[in-house]
Image 1: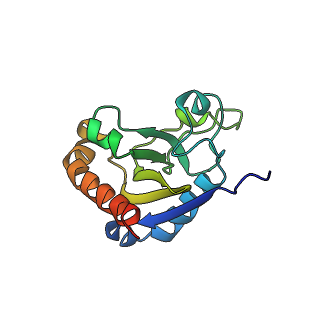
Image 2 (image 1 turned 180 degrees about the horizontal axis):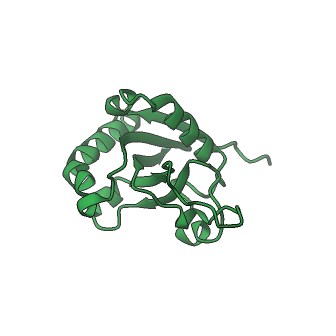
Image 3 (image 1 turned 120 degrees about the vertical axis):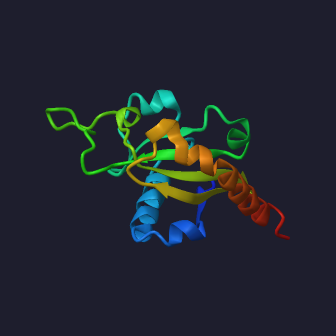
Length: 160
């Protein structure tokens, strides 16, 4: 019996569509997720990220919200995005494991699986100050992220 090919759909928030780098971010995120192991959805496990490099030049540490129960329930994640000054290689030029690839810019997204399809909803792209003031931008925006993620998920799940 031949395994069913992995089905992935990507959708983007209106806010992210207005980002001038939207197409590039989406294309690289799609590449990153499509080229990840089938069992790595919504993201590679921490122990895997700690041992292997990312499938993407631009995306580093990929993690879920560890502090907000509702965000975990709604599968809101964030993945670090390479900045100009990111040191994601060792001095010999080899690439660091994905977990060590952090930055102050990240992409916020949600994930769910329905009827055998993996759905990714790209919500926000926080540039250059994502971790400032103990993640203040994320904390201020989380209720909006939750609403967007849930609305998107229900629009798919409740479609006849």
